[in-house]
Length: 146
Figure 1 (tube, rainbow, N blue to C red):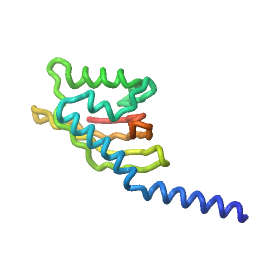
Figure 2: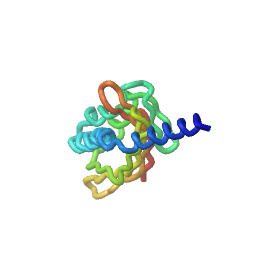
Figure 3: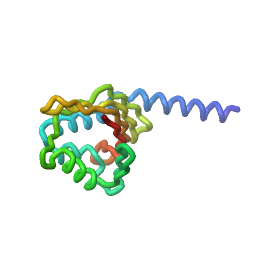
Figure 4: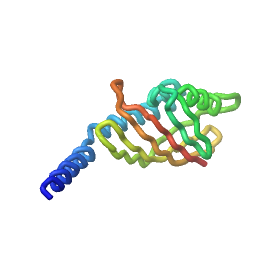
């Protein structure tokens, strides 16, 4: 019984220390803020710096799954830089950052694009971040929009 209580106490302390780390969640938030700024400057490469540069990066969008950093960059270029396309102005809203451990975070939020023709594509996303030696990176992105 004493061992069970010690394990439970250790788990509670671990959970409290993870959820009580505003500096860590602020580091994750900074990645998202930099992505928004890069997007609004038309710099897709800087926007993609927030993602894990790996063939194992995953994206779920609608009913499609894609893998790889380069594939993601190519898809963004085709969708937002192709003939007659534009990137618009991006805003992230209602961000909720939940630390899953000292080196993992789960982010939920909304994206809102404002295009020059007045259209406003928007939707929801979830991101999984992992801490690497070079900083926090998105390793999975699931987005659903209208």
